[in-house]
Amino acid sequence: MDKNVQYINAKGSLLDRNRIMTINKKNEKKQIYADNIVIATGMRPKTIQEVPGMTENSITSDDIFWLNKPPGKTLVIGGSYVALECAGFLSGLGYDTTLMLRSIPLRGFDQQMADLVLRHLEHSGVHIVRGTPKSNTKQKDGRLEVTWQSGSDVYDTVLLAIGREANTKDLGILDVGVDVDQDTGHVVGGYGGESERTSIPNIYAIGDILHGRPELTPVAIQAGKLLARRLYGTSLEAMDYELIPTTVFTPLEYSCVGLSEEEAESRFPDEIEVYHSYYKPLEYSLPHSSSEHCYIKVVCLRQFPHKVIGIHITGPNSGEVLQGFAVAMRTDSLTLQVLQSSVGIHPTTAEELVKLHITKRSGLDPTVSEC
Image 1 (tube, rainbow, N blue to C red):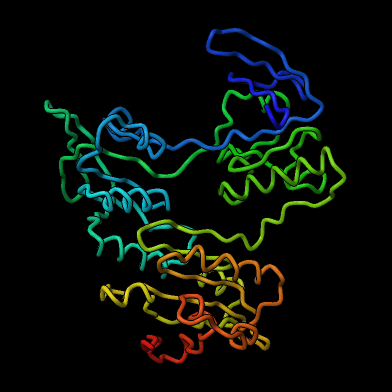
Image 2 (image 1 turned 30 degrees about the horizontal axis):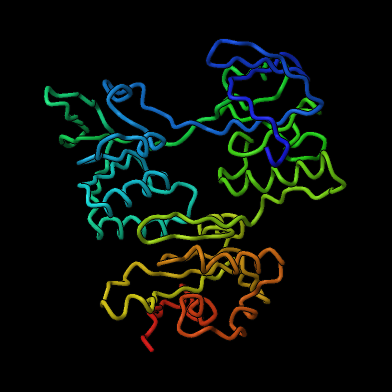
């Protein structure tokens, strides 16, 4: 391969801190020796074992792109960003889609923003059901009857997106002595002052399986690059897991970086100020599309110079908008004054961020008038 990487299509498990046993589909075994080992096995979707018929009659978010026929009328179960994204694109493709929420949507995200995303999903045609499934029964025609506390319905496809679990089973890492979180199965890092180093000095972990780290593909890629440079180059640069931006790719995108309003209030009680606005994107003007869910919120410290500690946007292409502001936040010098003294690019969504001037505390109407 052009990167001089040998790829082995096989299952592997640790024999000791330096040896890996691989077994391929022909049941051929091979031992590999390595000075350093990196565990990057990622996560797999969870299923609902305790609900009759759910495991055998459902697919997961990993399976949806492998279907050999259209999903038809679909029930998506879950409140994660994966669940909301799946419900959004299935509805957008024209399929009758229902989203079943067993608890709050987008746990860990700002809940005001999560509510806007959910309301827009409903506005765009996704049916919202709140409850817990009780059974999933395959009928004679192959369709699936799902029951919950307050009702039932019949679907062509039931898709589970209720979270993911660490794919660390059968790796032999416990036998070798790698420290693993007992509740989640995630590999515990942070040994020797390195976030990715495990309890065994020459064994590292990156990506979703690393305990307490953001479960995002770009995070795993960046951490892997930096680890490789430290191990085999001259770099000492470590991964910074703070202020990582992310986007929920629902029909109305939600992008954020930094603290949610709830986290900020918990960390800095009575010390935060929230600047916000409802705005209308330019591309919504000509078709007269509803912009009632397009919203910007900047969370600042109340004390001068009003350091920005969180930015949240719902709207079209919000990921494109937020990336630059996330870079600015990483300088640790982004304040409200810096935002407000910046000249906006007209007419853009990003401009609305530098025009913010109304606080939640004021009680004033934050709706932006059209130009």
